[in-house]
Image (cartoon, rainbow, N blue to C red; front, top):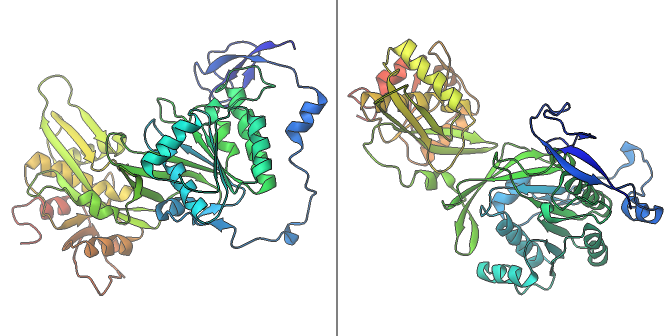
Length: 465
């Protein structure tokens, strides 16, 4: 079979007969890789590849929807991120850094489903069946299950045959980068192979009702390796966040056709695998130091869940050159903007100070309601004055130094009151029509401008005094 050379963009899958420095489709630089392209296979092979779709068009009003189509895994944090459970026939892509817990969570889900009597097929392309069992024994997951099948296979056509034979409820592919289609001459992990194998598995899932979990490697930029079209093919894209050297993991959905993308799941990596963190706020604040400048607490909302997180700031004199601005877990550009507001509107001389900001616990904050807390943390560190330990700070900060209202204020404040916080600084616009749970009590301190919050929080008299 004669082959010809083509160049494929790793980002979007655009193909060109010659190498290009910049992709004309997605404008990405230096993304083209060389691949060998083979002509279409014979007719019988084509039939093997496209016979999955055999349904006739039907009227939308005649389609019967099964309200109980979701399968509960028994892992509450995982079900929350998926939108309430696994949707039959869906394709879920799980990405994350090496060692973050992708294979571990897959074994956890397999163990839960097999305990419910469902059949699961675990396709391990990177480990032998013996190695997979040793890992399962170490975690104590699914070793004695009668409906958990394991196979070491990388040929996608053979995998399809196994799925048709076993008819499992769930198939786990570990990982998509090692699968290959024999009709494509390029190596496993190339753009063509990843796109073709993912397409075949997706077709099979939609026509048989089998749920497919695909584990994907990530690049150094943190995105899933392979063409961007891979994320377009699947129904749900989950990312594991967090440092693999710490015990906490955040599972976040960046795409979900069957639920919200605002929910997160919090897990702790223990000896026996991943365990759920049912009350992450208490865990994240458990080691918070007392009487330390630059340490404040804010309340953010991830989907329907309020989270209380600690924000730490450190301000020190720059010894030489330009002052540094470093941020971990909070948008760098937004930090620079808030520092500029502190300089212009409050007159704080921060231009010659190094400023370091950290969100404790590996949490990444995208909620603008943390603006006020970040500004107060920087001011506290610069003025060397502590914020009251039992105070939570919520609010968005504008360029004029004003504190703007935020959403779901009742949810945030009730969570703070439940955890024992006695004072809450919040936007003045949110103090009207406020609903506080009668079981809790908390003192509300509404502010209209950032200057009011700084005077209130980092003055010699604390709120609790």
